[in-house]
Length: 227
Image (cartoon, rainbow, N blue to C red; front, side, top):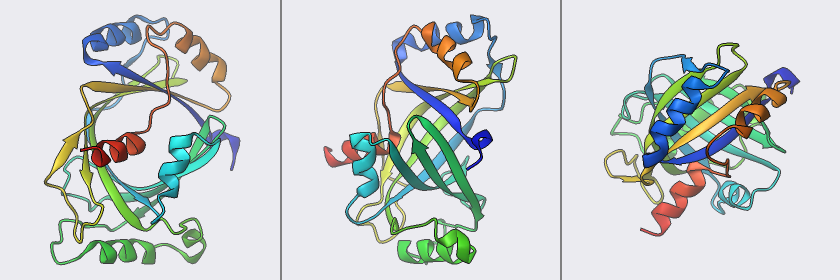
């Protein structure tokens, strides 16, 4: 993996009553954050193996871990422009391998097994090696994202809100009707490419709230388990 593809990500859960304070901090910071793209909804289907190894690795915080997901944007039931992603993380740095796929969960005839088999069959033989035994649909996570970027273009920030998960465990076909909220908070993520760790660290030092470990997938599984 080329170092230019590596990225640092820092996550900061923000209570709703402190959201305005965090927005003021971003916009008045010397880095001069401004909206970069239009807001949009993001949907991610998280896949795991029967023993939930990805969940366990992320829960325990091992230095080398990954996530397997299929991501699409805007409408929850419109997956025609989807992307299979392998998100890898090692000692605080991460990178993604992404593959556009045809993936239509609005097709009421197909079941989950057929959807996953169809996605796998679209990969080249070499790319199939990146996909291990994480073939079990666990949950779909949906949230609204705002995009910000510093004036220098070196640091990015996103704010995720209205975070809901849809349980896919033991589901024969996709569940996109019954969602569960992950709580009354938003998630701020601060991101910088490899080589700009100092700029990111300087920004974090001025933040009114402290970073913490956070995984939508882990929190989603725990929320669904304890319902």
